[in-house]
Amino acid sequence: MRSSNPVFSRRGFTRGNDYAGFGAQGTQGVPGGPQGGNPYAQAPRNPYDQPQSLTAENLEQAYAAPAAGPAQTGRMTIDDVVMRTGITLGTVVVGAVLGWVALPDNTGLAVGAALIAFVLAMVQAFKRTPVPALILGYAVFEGVFLGVLSRAYNEAWQGAPVQAVLGTMAVFAGMLFAYRARIIRVTARYQRIGLAVAVGFVLAMVVNLVFAAFGSSDGLGLRTGPLGIVFCLLGIALGAFFLSLDFKQVEDGIRGGAPRRESWLAAFGLTLSLVWIYLELLRLIAILRD
Image (cartoon, rainbow, N blue to C red; front, side, top):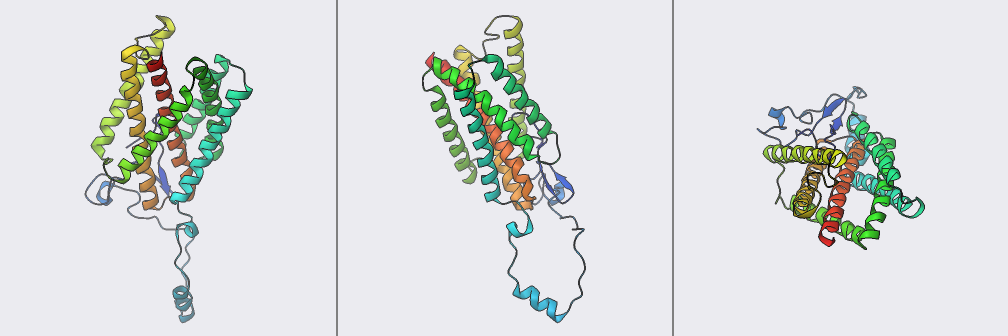
């Protein structure tokens, strides 16, 4: 799998000097397993390991020492993912509060913040390793965009942002439960179908935007009326799909021994997916209440 977020990035986890994409689907006889070229199947030799002479003193010290856990060996844990995700989402919230309270109601300002956030996200997406400054910079500008946009929606449809936030939390909780209970299984076929639908969805939105810019104000009508409701529901479903891929990425990274710094990539992907879902819910609520 090449991507698990709305910008179709090349995110993946690393182990040692290797690059791990999203191919990990299991362990035996399937793509991503040992026979499928999983970079986690065999750890590279640690260049810092130095041979030591085998003596009775060394053996005694080895048996007496407690076993090293992931935190001691520098591997990613679920706590790392939760903490980095909390920091990233918290930064988005701070930016949103700034955009809502302190900045003027300016469409150009919101569009500018969105473009900067998009550029930062794309730069990070094509980097091999996570850069926390890029991720947090994206979170700030994305938050500003969401704050200005949400205030405009709230003025037109009172309470719509709060409903969208609650809906986003519900989608996240539902997908996490479905993934943990194995109601949803992230297989290779599941990924191919979902990503194909996502590409078609994005292309349709681009065409609709072009028609809206150079033709009618509603474009092809994909964002208004009954057809808009259908596309909003499809967008929310795709956001849930991205979340399932993010969960799979985190699970495979922890199991494969990804370095702790890769938790920033997990936080980045989860934030992208949640922002995607929030925007689709915001649009859906506006259409239903219009």
